Image 1 (cartoon, protein in one colour):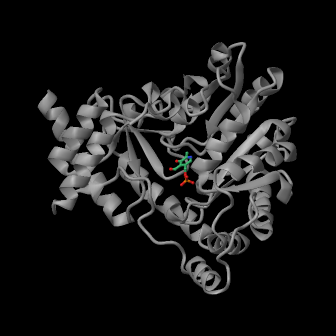
Image 2: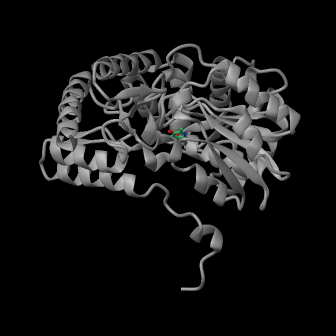
Length: 393
Ligand SMILES: Cc1ncc(COP(=O)(O)O)c(C=O)c1O
Protein backbone atom coordinates (compact mmCIF):
# COMPACT_ATOMS: atom_id res chain seq x y z
CA UNK A 1 0.00 0.00 0.00
CA UNK A 2 1.11 3.64 -0.37
CA UNK A 3 2.69 5.28 2.66
CA UNK A 4 0.23 6.08 5.49
CA UNK A 5 0.34 9.56 7.00
CA UNK A 6 2.72 10.11 9.86
CA UNK A 7 -0.25 11.50 11.78
CA UNK A 8 -2.04 8.15 11.74
CA UNK A 9 1.13 6.13 12.25
CA UNK A 10 1.99 8.37 15.20
CA UNK A 11 -1.11 7.33 17.13
CA UNK A 12 0.34 4.35 18.91
CA UNK A 13 -1.51 2.51 21.67
CA UNK A 14 -0.25 3.85 24.98
CA UNK A 15 0.11 1.94 28.19
CA UNK A 16 2.52 -0.95 27.91
CA UNK A 17 3.33 -3.68 30.35
CA UNK A 18 0.47 -2.78 32.70
CA UNK A 19 -2.08 -3.77 30.12
CA UNK A 20 -0.36 -7.11 29.76
CA UNK A 21 -1.40 -7.96 33.33
CA UNK A 22 -4.96 -7.02 32.41
CA UNK A 23 -4.97 -9.13 29.24
CA UNK A 24 -3.40 -12.10 31.02
CA UNK A 25 -6.06 -11.89 33.75
CA UNK A 26 -8.77 -11.65 31.12
CA UNK A 27 -7.50 -14.67 29.17
CA UNK A 28 -7.29 -16.78 32.31
CA UNK A 29 -10.79 -15.76 33.37
CA UNK A 30 -12.15 -16.65 29.92
CA UNK A 31 -10.47 -20.05 30.28
CA UNK A 32 -12.56 -20.66 33.41
CA UNK A 33 -10.23 -19.65 36.26
CA UNK A 34 -11.66 -17.92 39.34
CA UNK A 35 -10.03 -14.58 38.54
CA UNK A 36 -11.36 -11.36 40.10
CA UNK A 37 -10.99 -8.66 37.47
CA UNK A 38 -10.30 -5.30 39.08
CA UNK A 39 -8.51 -3.88 36.07
CA UNK A 40 -11.44 -2.85 33.86
CA UNK A 41 -13.09 0.55 33.84
CA UNK A 42 -16.57 -0.30 32.62
CA UNK A 43 -19.71 -0.76 34.68
CA UNK A 44 -20.68 -4.30 35.66
CA UNK A 45 -24.37 -3.37 35.23
CA UNK A 46 -26.55 -2.37 32.29
CA UNK A 47 -27.89 1.05 31.34
CA UNK A 48 -30.94 2.06 33.44
CA UNK A 49 -34.12 0.53 31.99
CA UNK A 50 -35.88 3.92 31.56
CA UNK A 51 -33.09 5.04 29.22
CA UNK A 52 -33.33 1.81 27.23
CA UNK A 53 -37.12 2.24 26.94
CA UNK A 54 -36.67 5.84 25.80
CA UNK A 55 -34.34 4.63 23.05
CA UNK A 56 -36.68 1.82 21.97
CA UNK A 57 -39.60 4.27 21.76
CA UNK A 58 -37.45 6.71 19.80
CA UNK A 59 -36.20 4.10 17.33
CA UNK A 60 -39.76 2.83 16.79
CA UNK A 61 -40.80 6.39 16.06
CA UNK A 62 -39.52 8.00 12.93
CA UNK A 63 -36.15 9.03 14.35
CA UNK A 64 -33.93 7.60 11.65
CA UNK A 65 -32.68 10.74 9.97
CA UNK A 66 -29.80 13.20 10.10
CA UNK A 67 -29.63 15.43 13.15
CA UNK A 68 -28.27 18.99 13.43
CA UNK A 69 -24.44 19.06 13.58
CA UNK A 70 -24.09 20.36 17.16
CA UNK A 71 -26.83 18.02 18.45
CA UNK A 72 -30.64 17.91 18.55
CA UNK A 73 -32.00 21.12 20.15
CA UNK A 74 -33.64 19.10 22.94
CA UNK A 75 -30.35 17.32 23.62
CA UNK A 76 -28.35 20.56 23.68
CA UNK A 77 -30.85 22.04 26.10
CA UNK A 78 -30.50 19.00 28.40
CA UNK A 79 -26.70 19.04 28.10
CA UNK A 80 -26.61 22.76 28.88
CA UNK A 81 -28.70 22.16 32.01
CA UNK A 82 -26.35 19.34 33.04
CA UNK A 83 -23.35 21.62 32.44
CA UNK A 84 -24.94 24.32 34.60
CA UNK A 85 -25.18 21.75 37.40
CA UNK A 86 -21.71 20.29 36.78
CA UNK A 87 -19.78 23.53 36.43
CA UNK A 88 -21.85 25.92 38.56
CA UNK A 89 -22.02 28.34 35.61
CA UNK A 90 -25.38 29.04 33.96
CA UNK A 91 -24.95 27.44 30.52
CA UNK A 92 -26.97 28.01 27.34
CA UNK A 93 -27.48 25.44 24.55
CA UNK A 94 -25.19 27.38 22.20
CA UNK A 95 -22.35 26.84 24.68
CA UNK A 96 -22.45 23.04 24.27
CA UNK A 97 -21.81 20.64 21.41
CA UNK A 98 -22.70 16.94 21.40
CA UNK A 99 -19.90 14.48 20.57
CA UNK A 100 -19.70 10.70 20.27
CA UNK A 101 -18.46 10.12 23.83
CA UNK A 102 -16.17 12.01 26.14
CA UNK A 103 -13.17 10.85 24.11
CA UNK A 104 -14.45 12.68 21.03
CA UNK A 105 -15.06 15.75 23.21
CA UNK A 106 -11.42 15.55 24.30
CA UNK A 107 -10.33 15.20 20.69
CA UNK A 108 -12.46 18.19 19.68
CA UNK A 109 -11.08 20.28 22.55
CA UNK A 110 -7.47 19.54 21.64
CA UNK A 111 -8.09 20.17 17.94
CA UNK A 112 -9.81 23.42 18.85
CA UNK A 113 -7.05 25.01 20.91
CA UNK A 114 -3.73 23.64 19.60
CA UNK A 115 -2.02 24.17 16.29
CA UNK A 116 0.71 21.95 14.92
CA UNK A 117 3.83 22.69 16.99
CA UNK A 118 1.96 24.15 19.96
CA UNK A 119 2.63 22.86 23.44
CA UNK A 120 0.36 21.73 26.25
CA UNK A 121 0.76 20.62 29.83
CA UNK A 122 -0.86 17.37 30.86
CA UNK A 123 -1.31 16.80 34.56
CA UNK A 124 -0.55 13.19 35.50
CA UNK A 125 -1.43 10.49 36.37
CA UNK A 126 -3.89 10.70 33.50
CA UNK A 127 -6.34 8.74 31.40
CA UNK A 128 -4.49 6.57 28.88
CA UNK A 129 -5.68 8.29 25.68
CA UNK A 130 -4.39 11.76 26.56
CA UNK A 131 -0.91 11.61 24.98
CA UNK A 132 -2.16 10.35 21.64
CA UNK A 133 -4.96 12.89 21.55
CA UNK A 134 -2.23 15.54 21.48
CA UNK A 135 -0.11 13.61 18.99
CA UNK A 136 -3.12 13.46 16.67
CA UNK A 137 -3.16 17.27 16.68
CA UNK A 138 0.58 17.49 15.96
CA UNK A 139 1.06 19.18 19.33
CA UNK A 140 3.69 18.45 21.92
CA UNK A 141 3.09 18.20 25.65
CA UNK A 142 4.91 18.05 28.94
CA UNK A 143 3.70 15.70 31.63
CA UNK A 144 3.57 17.26 35.09
CA UNK A 145 3.13 14.71 37.85
CA UNK A 146 1.00 15.14 40.95
CA UNK A 147 2.97 13.70 43.89
CA UNK A 148 1.40 10.70 45.60
CA UNK A 149 2.36 11.99 49.05
CA UNK A 150 0.42 15.16 48.25
CA UNK A 151 -2.72 13.08 47.60
CA UNK A 152 -2.17 13.36 43.82
CA UNK A 153 -3.18 17.04 43.91
CA UNK A 154 -1.80 19.33 41.16
CA UNK A 155 1.07 21.62 42.17
CA UNK A 156 1.17 25.12 40.71
CA UNK A 157 4.95 25.46 41.10
CA UNK A 158 5.55 22.29 39.09
CA UNK A 159 3.14 23.43 36.37
CA UNK A 160 4.74 26.87 36.18
CA UNK A 161 8.16 25.25 35.76
CA UNK A 162 6.89 23.34 32.71
CA UNK A 163 5.50 26.38 30.86
CA UNK A 164 7.08 27.21 27.50
CA UNK A 165 6.66 30.21 25.22
CA UNK A 166 4.37 28.11 22.96
CA UNK A 167 2.25 26.59 25.74
CA UNK A 168 -1.41 27.08 24.88
CA UNK A 169 -3.32 24.74 27.18
CA UNK A 170 -3.37 22.69 30.36
CA UNK A 171 -5.35 19.45 30.58
CA UNK A 172 -6.63 18.21 33.92
CA UNK A 173 -9.06 15.51 35.06
CA UNK A 174 -11.01 15.64 38.31
CA UNK A 175 -12.28 13.35 39.80
CA UNK A 176 -9.25 11.62 38.41
CA UNK A 177 -8.71 8.41 36.54
CA UNK A 178 -6.60 6.57 37.67
CA UNK A 179 -5.97 8.05 41.14
CA UNK A 180 -9.52 8.86 42.29
CA UNK A 181 -8.16 12.22 43.52
CA UNK A 182 -10.64 15.08 43.61
CA UNK A 183 -8.74 18.31 43.03
CA UNK A 184 -9.29 20.83 45.81
CA UNK A 185 -10.74 24.29 45.20
CA UNK A 186 -7.49 25.83 46.41
CA UNK A 187 -5.36 23.91 43.89
CA UNK A 188 -7.81 24.66 41.08
CA UNK A 189 -7.66 28.36 41.96
CA UNK A 190 -3.88 28.22 41.63
CA UNK A 191 -4.21 26.52 38.24
CA UNK A 192 -6.75 29.13 37.13
CA UNK A 193 -4.33 31.88 38.10
CA UNK A 194 -1.67 30.39 35.82
CA UNK A 195 -4.18 30.17 32.94
CA UNK A 196 -5.26 33.79 33.35
CA UNK A 197 -1.71 35.03 33.74
CA UNK A 198 -0.42 33.24 30.61
CA UNK A 199 -3.64 33.43 28.58
CA UNK A 200 -4.01 29.63 28.42
CA UNK A 201 -6.94 27.37 27.74
CA UNK A 202 -7.87 24.96 30.50
CA UNK A 203 -9.21 21.63 29.25
CA UNK A 204 -11.12 20.16 32.15
CA UNK A 205 -12.14 16.51 31.92
CA UNK A 206 -15.05 16.15 34.32
CA UNK A 207 -16.57 12.87 33.10
CA UNK A 208 -16.62 11.54 36.69
CA UNK A 209 -18.23 14.63 38.20
CA UNK A 210 -21.23 12.76 39.66
CA UNK A 211 -18.97 10.16 41.28
CA UNK A 212 -17.00 12.49 43.53
CA UNK A 213 -16.81 12.17 47.28
CA UNK A 214 -17.98 15.67 48.18
CA UNK A 215 -18.67 18.93 46.35
CA UNK A 216 -17.64 18.93 42.67
CA UNK A 217 -15.64 22.06 41.90
CA UNK A 218 -15.31 22.89 38.22
CA UNK A 219 -12.54 25.35 37.32
CA UNK A 220 -15.01 26.87 34.84
CA UNK A 221 -16.73 28.50 37.81
CA UNK A 222 -13.62 30.36 38.97
CA UNK A 223 -13.16 34.07 38.15
CA UNK A 224 -12.27 34.73 34.51
CA UNK A 225 -12.28 31.02 33.63
CA UNK A 226 -15.57 30.48 31.74
CA UNK A 227 -14.04 32.26 28.72
CA UNK A 228 -10.98 30.00 28.66
CA UNK A 229 -12.24 26.61 29.87
CA UNK A 230 -13.49 23.72 27.78
CA UNK A 231 -15.24 21.09 29.89
CA UNK A 232 -15.36 17.47 28.73
CA UNK A 233 -18.50 15.61 29.79
CA UNK A 234 -19.94 12.19 29.04
CA UNK A 235 -22.99 10.01 29.52
CA UNK A 236 -20.72 6.99 30.01
CA UNK A 237 -20.00 7.10 33.71
CA UNK A 238 -22.75 9.23 35.27
CA UNK A 239 -25.63 7.60 33.38
CA UNK A 240 -24.24 4.07 32.89
CA UNK A 241 -24.00 4.46 29.11
CA UNK A 242 -20.43 3.60 28.06
CA UNK A 243 -21.47 1.76 24.91
CA UNK A 244 -23.88 4.45 23.70
CA UNK A 245 -21.03 6.80 22.83
CA UNK A 246 -22.43 10.16 23.81
CA UNK A 247 -20.65 13.07 25.42
CA UNK A 248 -20.37 16.79 25.04
CA UNK A 249 -18.10 19.77 25.24
CA UNK A 250 -18.94 23.01 27.03
CA UNK A 251 -17.18 26.30 26.35
CA UNK A 252 -17.48 29.87 25.14
CA UNK A 253 -20.16 30.23 22.47
CA UNK A 254 -17.68 31.47 19.83
CA UNK A 255 -15.52 28.38 20.27
CA UNK A 256 -18.52 26.05 20.17
CA UNK A 257 -19.65 27.73 16.93
CA UNK A 258 -16.24 27.01 15.43
CA UNK A 259 -16.40 23.43 16.63
CA UNK A 260 -19.63 22.80 14.74
CA UNK A 261 -17.40 22.75 11.64
CA UNK A 262 -15.39 19.90 13.15
CA UNK A 263 -18.59 17.86 13.43
CA UNK A 264 -19.29 18.73 9.79
CA UNK A 265 -16.18 16.84 8.73
CA UNK A 266 -16.23 14.10 11.38
CA UNK A 267 -19.56 12.94 12.80
CA UNK A 268 -21.97 14.88 10.58
CA UNK A 269 -24.34 14.72 13.52
CA UNK A 270 -25.17 11.93 15.96
CA UNK A 271 -27.79 9.14 15.84
CA UNK A 272 -31.28 10.58 16.37
CA UNK A 273 -32.72 7.84 18.59
CA UNK A 274 -29.65 7.80 20.84
CA UNK A 275 -29.77 11.59 21.10
CA UNK A 276 -33.42 11.43 22.19
CA UNK A 277 -32.72 8.71 24.77
CA UNK A 278 -29.79 10.74 26.12
CA UNK A 279 -31.90 13.90 26.31
CA UNK A 280 -34.54 12.03 28.30
CA UNK A 281 -31.89 10.45 30.55
CA UNK A 282 -30.36 13.87 31.24
CA UNK A 283 -33.72 15.56 31.82
CA UNK A 284 -34.77 12.91 34.33
CA UNK A 285 -31.32 12.05 35.70
CA UNK A 286 -32.05 8.37 35.03
CA UNK A 287 -29.79 6.24 37.20
CA UNK A 288 -27.51 9.09 38.29
CA UNK A 289 -28.22 8.88 42.01
CA UNK A 290 -28.24 5.09 42.07
CA UNK A 291 -24.95 4.78 40.17
CA UNK A 292 -23.23 7.39 42.35
CA UNK A 293 -24.55 5.64 45.47
CA UNK A 294 -23.36 2.27 44.25
CA UNK A 295 -19.79 3.46 43.64
CA UNK A 296 -19.68 5.36 46.93
CA UNK A 297 -20.74 2.23 48.82
CA UNK A 298 -18.16 0.12 46.96
CA UNK A 299 -15.41 2.64 47.67
CA UNK A 300 -16.28 2.58 51.37
CA UNK A 301 -16.28 -1.21 51.49
CA UNK A 302 -12.91 -1.49 49.79
CA UNK A 303 -11.22 1.34 51.67
CA UNK A 304 -12.50 0.05 55.02
CA UNK A 305 -11.04 -3.36 54.22
CA UNK A 306 -7.72 -1.90 53.10
CA UNK A 307 -7.27 0.60 55.92
CA UNK A 308 -6.53 -2.15 58.40
CA UNK A 309 -3.81 -3.68 56.23
CA UNK A 310 -0.19 -3.38 57.19
CA UNK A 311 2.06 -1.78 54.62
CA UNK A 312 -0.72 -0.84 52.18
CA UNK A 313 -1.94 2.75 52.19
CA UNK A 314 -4.64 4.64 50.37
CA UNK A 315 -3.79 7.69 48.22
CA UNK A 316 -6.29 9.85 46.37
CA UNK A 317 -9.32 7.53 46.04
CA UNK A 318 -11.92 10.18 46.87
CA UNK A 319 -14.04 9.86 43.72
CA UNK A 320 -14.45 8.31 40.29
CA UNK A 321 -14.43 4.57 39.67
CA UNK A 322 -11.00 3.70 41.03
CA UNK A 323 -9.00 3.34 44.20
CA UNK A 324 -5.23 3.82 44.27
CA UNK A 325 -3.22 1.85 46.80
CA UNK A 326 0.40 2.48 47.71
CA UNK A 327 1.96 -0.99 47.89
CA UNK A 328 5.58 0.16 47.77
CA UNK A 329 6.28 -0.99 51.33
CA UNK A 330 5.34 -4.52 50.28
CA UNK A 331 7.03 -4.44 46.86
CA UNK A 332 8.43 -1.28 45.26
CA UNK A 333 8.05 -2.73 41.74
CA UNK A 334 4.31 -2.37 41.09
CA UNK A 335 4.37 -4.52 37.96
CA UNK A 336 6.03 -7.34 39.84
CA UNK A 337 3.41 -6.92 42.57
CA UNK A 338 0.53 -7.05 40.07
CA UNK A 339 1.84 -10.16 38.33
CA UNK A 340 2.43 -11.94 41.64
CA UNK A 341 -1.03 -10.97 42.92
CA UNK A 342 -2.55 -12.43 39.76
CA UNK A 343 -0.51 -15.63 39.97
CA UNK A 344 -0.91 -16.27 43.68
CA UNK A 345 -4.35 -14.87 44.49
CA UNK A 346 -6.03 -14.60 41.08
CA UNK A 347 -6.76 -10.89 41.37
CA UNK A 348 -6.18 -8.71 38.29
CA UNK A 349 -5.24 -5.07 38.99
CA UNK A 350 -3.43 -2.38 37.01
CA UNK A 351 0.16 -1.54 38.00
CA UNK A 352 0.30 2.17 38.82
CA UNK A 353 3.39 2.81 36.73
CA UNK A 354 1.37 2.17 33.56
CA UNK A 355 -0.22 5.55 34.33
CA UNK A 356 3.09 7.39 34.76
CA UNK A 357 5.87 7.96 37.26
CA UNK A 358 3.76 9.50 40.03
CA UNK A 359 1.71 6.32 40.35
CA UNK A 360 4.73 4.00 40.47
CA UNK A 361 4.67 1.82 43.58
CA UNK A 362 0.86 1.78 43.46
CA UNK A 363 -1.88 -0.44 42.10
CA UNK A 364 -5.15 0.82 40.64
CA UNK A 365 -8.24 -1.07 41.70
CA UNK A 366 -11.44 -0.71 39.71
CA UNK A 367 -14.70 -0.53 41.65
CA UNK A 368 -16.63 -2.11 38.77
CA UNK A 369 -17.52 -5.21 40.79
CA UNK A 370 -20.22 -5.89 43.41
CA UNK A 371 -19.40 -5.24 47.06
CA UNK A 372 -19.08 -8.95 47.91
CA UNK A 373 -16.49 -9.43 45.17
CA UNK A 374 -14.55 -6.37 46.36
CA UNK A 375 -14.58 -7.80 49.89
CA UNK A 376 -13.25 -11.12 48.64
CA UNK A 377 -10.59 -9.29 46.61
CA UNK A 378 -9.55 -7.32 49.69
CA UNK A 379 -9.24 -10.56 51.68
CA UNK A 380 -7.03 -12.03 48.95
CA UNK A 381 -4.94 -8.85 48.87
CA UNK A 382 -4.48 -8.94 52.64
CA UNK A 383 -3.35 -12.58 52.51
CA UNK A 384 -1.03 -11.81 49.61
CA UNK A 385 0.54 -8.75 51.22
CA UNK A 386 1.38 -10.53 54.48
CA UNK A 387 2.63 -13.69 52.76
CA UNK A 388 4.73 -11.59 50.38
CA UNK A 389 6.41 -9.81 53.26
CA UNK A 390 7.20 -13.12 54.95
CA UNK A 391 8.74 -14.48 51.75
CA UNK A 392 10.76 -11.31 51.30
CA UNK A 393 11.95 -11.56 54.89
C1 LIG B 1 -10.86 10.48 32.50
C2 LIG B 1 -11.62 9.98 31.34
N1 LIG B 1 -11.94 10.84 30.36
C3 LIG B 1 -12.63 10.45 29.28
C4 LIG B 1 -13.02 9.14 29.13
C5 LIG B 1 -13.75 8.77 27.88
O1 LIG B 1 -15.02 8.30 28.16
P1 LIG B 1 -16.11 8.11 27.04
O2 LIG B 1 -15.47 8.31 25.72
O3 LIG B 1 -16.66 6.74 27.24
O4 LIG B 1 -17.14 9.15 27.32
C6 LIG B 1 -12.71 8.20 30.13
C7 LIG B 1 -13.08 6.78 29.99
O5 LIG B 1 -12.73 5.92 30.74
C8 LIG B 1 -11.99 8.63 31.26
O6 LIG B 1 -11.65 7.79 32.25
